[in-house]
Image (cartoon, rainbow, N blue to C red; front, side, top):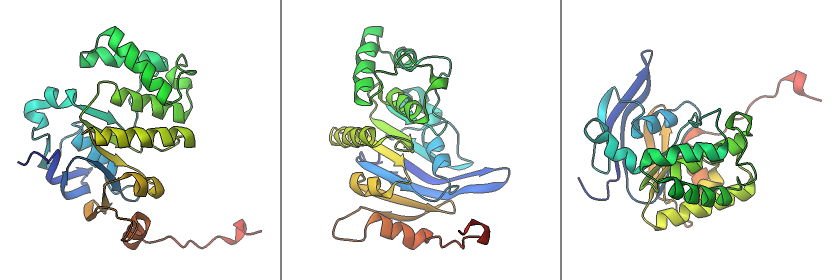
Length: 248
């Protein structure tokens, strides 16, 4: 297996209640920022769960850094940061308490955790709200807290489910800058997003899923078709008929 094959997913399938969600996914992710696109329900979040070891494929295999979760789960997770669909917050803890709880799990001292948490809270504009209990946070605050938790241990591989959803413009710009810097420093990022303008600006590679399969895989280029053009050529543009009762 080549050294650049950071994430290697081979013929992975997954079904729920006998309904196929992923149908033979072959995906190799190399260093950079890879965006995973597709309509709701095509299997993006399911694929991220397989790649993060939260679930196993029904068939096929998944390797992270050349290792399998079955044989090297602990080693993989030390180098893996995950922003899951459900965020994974400790609801009864405050923003800062969530971060302080995570650090020692990855072997950080309390002083290291506190210093890194302060940096991330400042970057993500969470300093003022750091003492807010998670269940009382806005959706954007919750998303940014979960992102901070995913990055706290300085992972080499990062899997992010909709990191820009519900995020204010200033924080979105800061997060984009952070991702670009992480990528330049050798961190591999795989993210899902419905915000095509951000994907066009940020991603070094785009993979599109349709009906549980990879149907497009390309490197965005200013001189070729943009991400939006490629996406809608596959997914199509909705042209709904507005009901009469909604007309004024």
